[in-house]
Length: 486
Image (tube, rainbow, N blue to C red; front, side):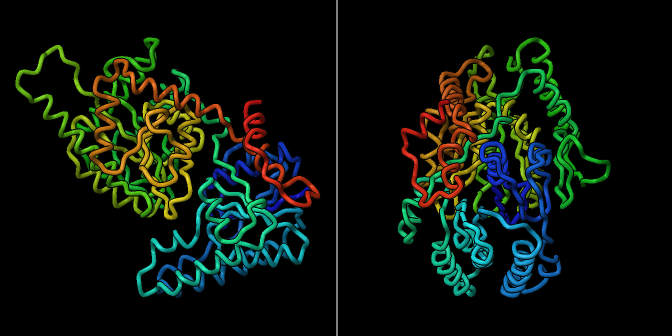
């Protein structure tokens, strides 16, 4: 059997579609053709798999960025339509199934449906979010007619598929309200891949040593930035910061590494390591984390300068906040970070390879998720990765997040920067001494890590691609639980 995966975006930054490709080959025995834009390197398991064939199509010309917004959209859709038509109808062999990532839905729905009709292929749409909800973030009120059309287009043409997968129960109910048959919709929650796991002590020490040069100085991001730990000379512009701050961060990292050498990965004298992954887009308010960091710094300064404070009282924890990811707003926030003057909190931004990102999550003490969801119905995969590494999280509270994060069981939820600051105070007030709440959340994250992608895919997605399946039927919850525990 042959399956075509269509990702009208950077395949290397689409982990869910990479996981689909891997599972289709290992569990389904399929040959997989991937149609996507070039960009970040996919995971090595994808590149080394002889049954996965990558077919990159050209990205829209950069010249389009100089046009007015409405013309950008028009010519981008025309360009994408032609490239998709060439790839799906003329260049690739016929597939039994086509798995389409949504968003974007323009122009993929129309041309993928036409290609499937011409070649006798069954179309499966994997709903990660809704395209019109993302479009709404970037359109001015003068372009609202475009949003109205995009909303109608997605809801109308989204019905014409053999089957559907989505990332949350709430999203499934919304699709049913659109008129999609309930029996054709499969909820496949994101789950971590096997390489997301707790990092061993010496592996963590090696990782921090390799990342140390990138952590000492805040780096201004560029379009061709190499992953941290692999930075070439003069490739990135450094934002000027005081030498004192660089020395302080160096001491913190040395403390992390030295404690590993002493037999303990998390002993006294080191900072708490907090990791946040972001795409630097408008649907993630990074100012929440920055404001919380400043407020935490102010609280620490107040405590240390208070009269009557016992000399034997533990010092408040120092925080090393590492933010990973690429995106349009990164440079703007890096300049804001460079203007902060803090002694007890340091914020750094990195772009990491798959392996180092997983290693960093497995070496950290807390994850922070700022995702709010443009539709309110999708779930952040970054939290899934954190749970895979047994890392508890603090996540922004919104309507669907409870499907993933259970309050005070595997994480804490917040809505304001003050609430996030309070989370830091509650979890790290006596760090690195034992903290009952932090220990409890770590145990909850460990339990959450037991649910893995392969077992979930086998119970929820495999029935969709079973050859000659007449009508997809949703597996029972009991069957899914049994399969996920085997």
